[in-house]
Length: 147
Image 1 (cartoon, rainbow, N blue to C red):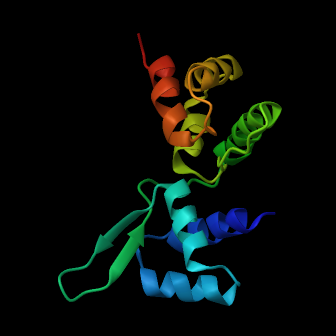
Image 2: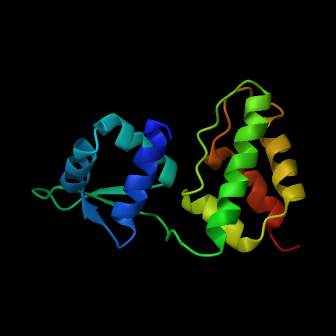
């Protein structure tokens, strides 16, 4: 498990019950030997909302959507694994994680392998940069939208 994978897992666990003070999150991360910048990258991967609690208040972090731990989780892992495999075949490393709320939502919505592959091809045809969930989301959600 990479450092970013550990950070994503820790952050998802810390935020599963709601918003938390950023200082508490970073203190937990420091206890697990994870750097602040790694936690910021993990927050980006999970779509964490970072807000300042008033003028004198500190920062809070919260998930933009729930991370369910049910039937969707194994399918989300399959989706993330396939995307990483396809990116590896092109010599790139994709920052895609099964814990990302968007990947979990796709799993819950029952995205098919054919739709996933088609969205991947559309998202990577004209762009040589590593794939991100955000870039894939627009294509996949168009394919999954009811006609």
